[in-house]
Length: 144
Image (tube, rainbow, N blue to C red):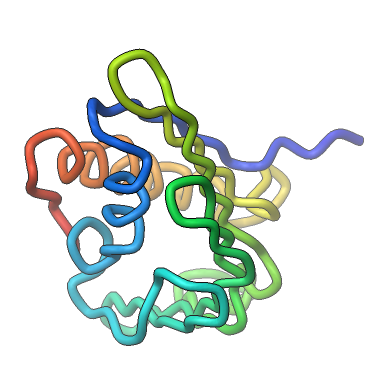
């Protein structure tokens, strides 16, 4: 059975290094309540939204090219399995494109078969296609 991991793509008229810096600026586009660092291999960070939190470790970082966030812990209180994201990976790939870059984000393990898929797909769409894209194109994101 083929898994359909969540995937999103955006483009922006910026350099690959600028795109990488914006992705790493998690507080600027995703979560105001952010602790840690999100730019180099070995960095760890946590995002919090009320009772919800997700802990990440940067497993592989290639500035200007790609970064991989591994979920080491989470508490998703609205789900039956409050740790559903544990062991999933959020991969970001930055590719030079005409006039800028294309950013592909894939959340490996966030598939239609899991409870969170619909709500989390909607959330990622807003954060990546909306807030991160706005940070990259107009200089201001809308973190929660």
